[in-house]
Image 1 (cartoon, helix red, strand yellow):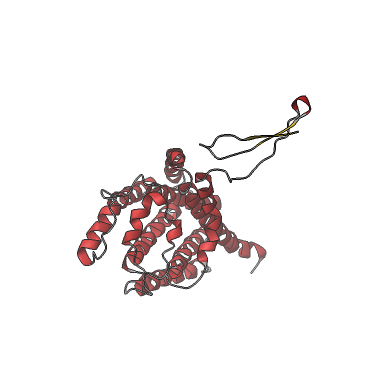
Image 2 (cartoon, helix red, strand yellow):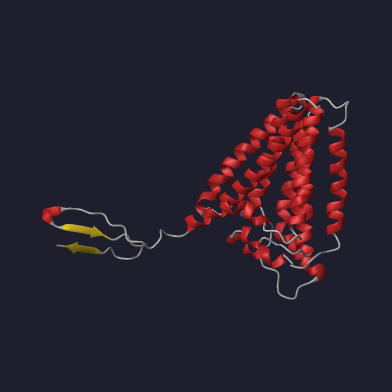
Length: 296
């Protein structure tokens, strides 16, 4: 295979990995900033959503390589709006009550649905908007990207509801603490094998078609982007049950929580020399009186 042939597949693999890691971390970071910043974050995300839908519509007939990358990124940005709207608490459900201890079976499921119903309806509406924006076009990269993310996220929700080993509760912000009551920790559940087997078969088909001799450059790029995104979603499912420290991939994004706390309780010396005397002013937390120490 020539260098151009290698790059034809290596570049979409690298791009999909990069935007998956960066977008996930960025959303976690913004979610954990002080609550007063969330409306501004959602405003920016909404502008990106509108721009993504407009771009998807404009590129629906573009079968160039840049068109594939742009549509893929727009589909990811559209999904990012839904993720932010949920984790920032703007679009959740009609109930924010935690699940009572001992609640099981159908009552527990109904309570879980009420906790995220509005978000599921918003996901349906967003999917309809993305499909409408690209309807009839040859470039469906963005649409399939959105659909993959949507269905695999729905699958992961069912799995954490039924029970998995790793819940990654540290990534759930405090204003969504009630969500933790619906998560169940157990080694495995009956849905999980199907949740990884069916997507794996689809991913294999995508990879085979991407590598087919008759595949055009656009088709190879599009199918590679979709295959990598699906494989990453499958990997995220495995992260739920395998004893791996995968949360370390995005621990950098949790640094935003430090901004919620006040400055560290340290003494910063600021020397002044009025009238031959050296003055140190202590930096102290809010609600504490300032201390002045005069040193002759």
